[in-house]
Length: 260
Image 1 (cartoon, rainbow, N blue to C red):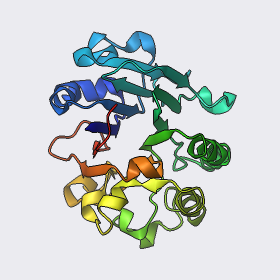
Image 2: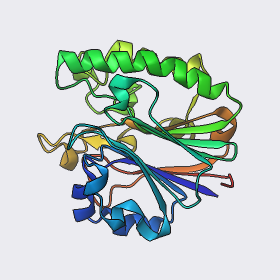
Image 3: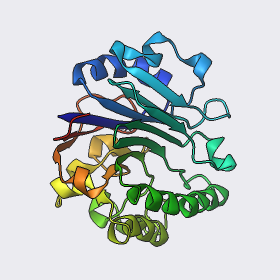
Image 4: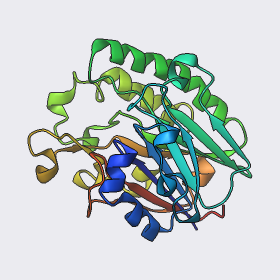
């Protein structure tokens, strides 16, 4: 059984203080994908670098206290790929891929566009280069899971207040249509939705820090594990862990009937 976890930490040092690594050690995951490290390599202590005999890999942003992705694995990968070969977004630390035999696991942090029109434009630029990359991955003959914070809620069921958010970044028609192309045209599978097609409140993985969103469960589903079809068909469980809070996002935990 392959257990894969993905979580946007909103700062790895903050998450450590909130008990993330103690929780992670209990989970016995095979692969853990991290987004929004907000740290560079010298900032990482031993626990963060290699917790519980896991092997750690990191692609930080060049800008301090910003973005960055990471990945822990129980098995040593055959190959690790940092970045997409795009100078703008590789400088922001948004893509990290680990290959294990014929399986690739990716930690992805798709840009948010909510802070400004300039960042929304950057988000669209990233989407433009990432769609052909996803096409290349799915036609590579490899099995792939792309884990991460996609910063897009795909369906109305994926956020509480969908009507009032139709003109807001993360639920714009263009963003939703782009995500739909991954599934409908390229053949990728939204694994959580395969196992829980009708989930609403239980599916959320992110809550604003404003207006008691967490207490009222006014959330969004922004974190996904998107897999190639044969691997997605082997998924046996998917859940969002909410008993403890390590971040404004919650961990998304999935198990696949697959040997690493």
